[in-house]
Length: 56
Image 1: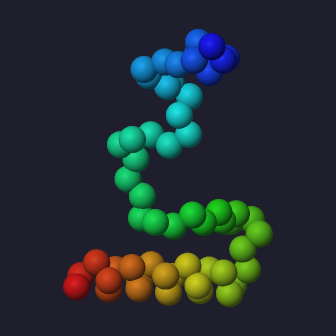
Image 2: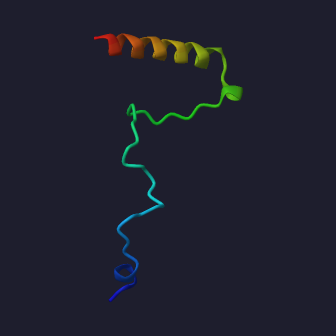
């Protein structure tokens, strides 16, 4: 038997992604302290586009 066969557990408490996690399909990192005017305008446009998309 290998090492993996001895360490199998039914519940993996260290899972990377919870099974009940809800995602919008985006993986975006944003730091407010590094944002310039163009970044803030782009964020606003993105929020407005998301709002329009959800209404349809």
